Image (tube, rainbow, N blue to C red; front, side):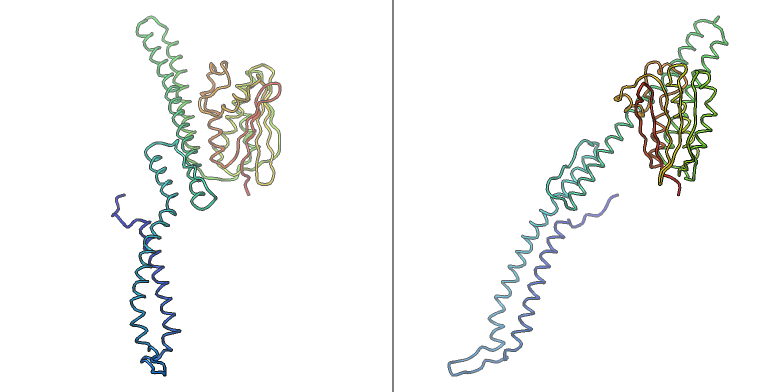
Length: 359
């Protein structure tokens, strides 16, 4: 927004310092007049040794000195105020410079203000922390956009290939072509729906109400039981009532994603998935554990990034699009909770979701 130019803060502070100094000098002279000169007779008094100056004589002698003193105070106030204002506003200029660099797109710059803790230091540290978070968020969004573009391009490229093959081979089985196109189209729809769910969680545009995580765990387990039986996975749900404050739809999506992820990443027949719920004052906890291959802790720390999958075998599985744990992370963050992932001894993954409890 365009604004009319105004007086700089440094000039305002300088004028304020000079004005305060002039007012202080004038008050001092007023005190001298009130408590000294008013008791002196107006006319000179003759004495044996001569004359005692009267009030008028003292004023005529004192007035030039007062004028020079006030002038000196004015110059001193302007010069000293300008210097002191510059020293006081130097940290603010550094913050302004960093703000302009950030506005131009340079998010890697940091103020790193030295010195003792004060209001400007606190502001600079807060601004540095904001820049760090913003830079990480922008980098994450760039990676997400690149990965999303790649994932969306894949089904389109497969569709184009199938159509090209069908065009070059008129005798190709139409039923097989339709089935292939339907599979690719279904995967593209799943990916788009996952992207929409992730966007909705990030925007935090949902109403909050009391939600029992134990009921959501039972619902997710019942829904995914056929998939678990198909893979030979034992699915167990236990625990106590854990009432969280949040969106029932998003928390159901969170629970379903975790259970689905545990089943899909359970890479051996006879494995197990355990879902437990618990609560303690102020928090509701959901824990999902699954057996599986041993996981590198360095890999576990990246599993919540979009389009990250646990291994090469999972990359060929068409039951997921690589956004399950990323959506879980966004939902947990939108609800003000915490998400912890850890590799289990003997293989597999343990996921702990802690959410604010409903009061």
